[in-house]
Length: 121
Length: 110
Image 1 (tube, rainbow over the protein chains, first blue to last red):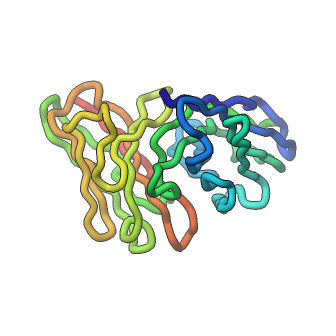
Image 2 (image 1 turned 120 degrees about the vertical axis):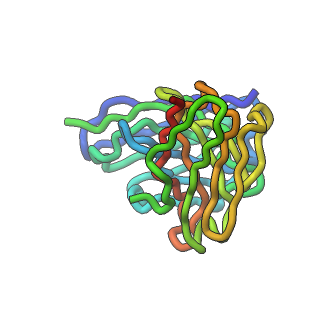
């Protein structure tokens, strides 16, 4: 069965960096686009970034553009999110999600359990 | 302010039919597939509907959706207590080059 397991979250001071990982299993990782989505405490869902199946197409939300980088390592079946210059407003649960096979840029079929990132001094 | 507009709340009694609307524009719902998710408290979202009106395996046919023009709607028939959750619509926005979500609708089963 499809499994997505995030790791790397925690408490970090403003301005510092953190790298999230998402370990994928139960499917052929290399043929799917992948996304990161976040949810601030008590708030709705906010899309963060996407990568195409081959990493050639990456898109970012304006709120993280220039600070966050999405990447993938197909040899490790792992998706990453490098987060630099973190701000308190980046505090959220971060989910990785596997894209729809056809409308890969628009929606997601499977979600990880989420990992909490808290940016606080 | 979310790009897609959903009512913040909806409610119904067991057995009833409820609908949740999702309003957008020509650059998002008007030209791209709509997805619906639901989220129980403290858990990750789950896919409910993909590509406008397709149900993943395991999602009961009590859930249906449609898209017309720049709006979409999710219908839940035969409402059950376990349907109480937050519901979100999403799609791609061509102008923003971003995935956009509705603000979410909290469904209460009375």
